[in-house]
Length: 358
Image (cartoon, rainbow, N blue to C red; front, side, top):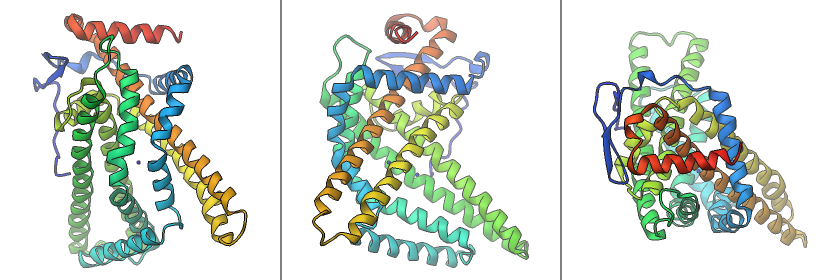
């Protein structure tokens, strides 16, 4: 659940406007804001997210059922249970290898083979799961955001939130595609430039440069995904979607990138563990028990694992909402001139929720 939009948001020098419930104000100088204690902040947000999930356990467990079709489809597409997905993925993989060969990137090394295989898996899943993403996943996120919405006593209507995050999700998809395209263009230019300098004379140097390129690509995609997730929550909370939500998300996490990465890391590790569990307990076993009477039990176990995946998706959305509220609350401490109107009222509500955990 990886740009032509290469821009630098210079908050210190640019009066970039952020709207929050019809309140407009330029972002003040952020140089006075101290760097956060990353570990403490991350643990606090995770603890608050788990507390919120347990506090509203019945609501969130029922809401997780809405994401079950999406979870089941992503687990099946990433395993060996879908022949069509595997065939499409292999075709995509060979196309990528041919593309890299044509532009001069050495694909004979095992590292590049693994990199292109993982990339083909990611792109294949993204394409095949797009209908489930735009329906079941966004509906689940809408209900979660609506429940956690504290701008007003009465939360906004479901359709208002859903339309906002749907609009933002379409821009997110375009942003991810742009990030991948830009990364490939940079890799192409870098490898061709190094080839003209005849740098590729040592296999060790080629592997080292390949690893550096892979790490750079991973960092770009990871930051893009973090921005997209924050943009979804922000657009749902403000019921204003579109590309402006992505820009606001960039501004909001500008000084909190490390915390956002840690939060995404613990969620992604958990999701990867569940995918491995599904592969070990369901995919491999089902392949050996196709004609056995135990197959229904394997299917039931697969549904339980898919539901566990849905719960983690729900917890991920809650975590992003808590991170959003943490950003709003922290900014309010350093912008005393904005402690009027709706932002001030919202921060007081967030502060009240935070005090309940103390």
